[in-house]
Amino acid sequence: MFSPRKTDPFFAALLTIAEHVQEAMHYANDYKVTSVADLKEVSIRLKKYETDGDDLIHELISKLNVSFMTPIEREDILQLAIKMDDILDGVEHFAANLEMFSLIEIDEYVQTFMDNIVKSSDEIVKAMKLLERRKLVEMRDHAVTIKEYERVCDEVLRTSIKQLFIRETDPIRIIQFKDIYELLEDVADYCQDVANTIETIIMRNA
Image (cartoon, rainbow, N blue to C red; front, side, top):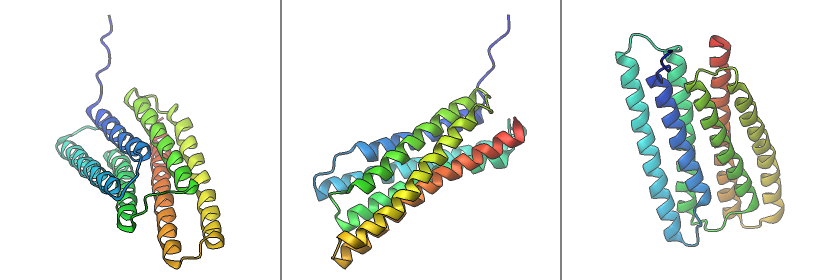
């Protein structure tokens, strides 16, 4: 009988990081904010996600530093982990700015951004599960889907800023919402960076 292939610790670590990002994105999207106190709670919780994410990155780096062999290039492993961590950093920054501006009510554009970012995090987890099983070619579909979500966010950014200047007369709120939209587009870009790194890994190893 053939014994089952053991899970590689690096691929397992990347999946753990991806699932941590996914959990944070779903938390940020699902939490129903009704007060400034809620904004504070979300900001604190996402800061904890971000800090815990840094710890996961440091653990991975420690493994890389003491390992002679890695299943793929160690630079690709590190790049993939860092790009996923950028998503966490971005959403934590977004939440911190919501609290700073005391923006309790979000509009349809913020919600559309978040919906696409959450779906991107789901696709990243699916891709990392395939990587753990060494099904590299199958990861490509998920990378393509993430890029499509980022394309949607590009369109949302253009529309949201255009409508902001049409509908809003308060210059302070224009500044605040423009900042929020651009922060969320940055997070979508970080998701695309993960997709690009996945495609690089496929190209080098499949």
